[in-house]
Image (cartoon, rainbow, N blue to C red; front, side, top):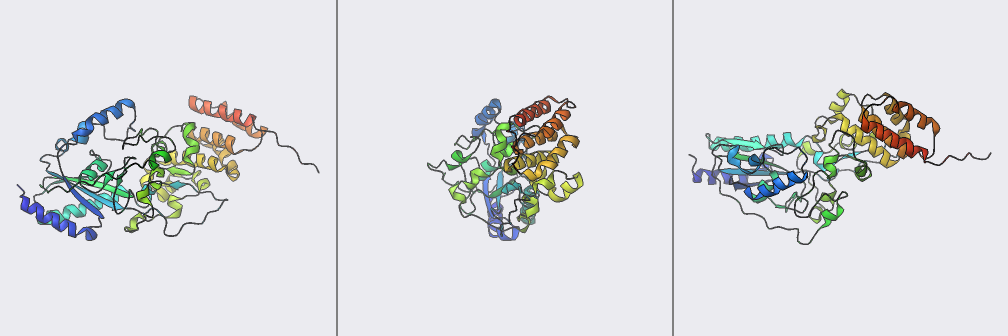
Length: 393
């Protein structure tokens, strides 16, 4: 059995070794249940406010002992990520770019956090060889923001994200369940006060203002879906092709926050602000080479290409029309063909019978109901455009 004296010694070593470990904040809490969340989690699930990406067994999300025998404590770590480029990339209207939300900049944070947590584990095991651990990131059972809040790293804001004093909400979180009886750290006082800026800024009104949200309405979730994107969300996406950080940008705690502490998190322009037209014809190999190491690539190529098409429509980028028309005729995926038809109908300024006829001809070959519906709407939209008046000589 591991003594409290051993736990105190190791905790002190960890606190002094953060820089060597590559960890920006560390906190400790007990492995007691998070059972105060049960009613809320069941209510969210019943209302359809979850994404389906969450761990499916609610009991395992709130009772650490169900996923780790002999659980005594949980270690929570935070790593700060950049919110801006060191040098903002130049823009070019001929090569419109999309963007990934900041939490997908640099190497996939899951890999970074697991590597950092292994450093923590190695340091502890050098002192306590019989200690046991279960590390996890947001794909694990526990709810990382709730663990981090109880471990004293920060407070959960109205948008459901952890807000730290030093780094705002621009932090990645990971946790380690262990059989070491660490003394828990004190919780941080709630700091949102009467501020509702994130709630007001959310373009889809997904935030309830109490830390809860309808995750189905969140643009971050919508950019990760694989089917047809509901029209209500298309304009609201603007040019973001993965994720959403509007609620973070609007948060006063994030004003002026921009840390560049980890080289592997640095954004590279062509990865996190890719040229949209180039994305439309990417092979699987090229996609993996350019985006495969980003957290935002986990759903594969199709959702990002679909989103790139919508971003081109939002830019009203007429230089993209030839590329989009080619997708309508040649792309083997119904969702991409339908989204391209939508984009053409938005970008095309005037009534063009040749384009209408081309989409109509493709429509006759379609069998998927949503694609048929989308193409019919695109044709109707194009028919309602004004005729281009010929110039007098």
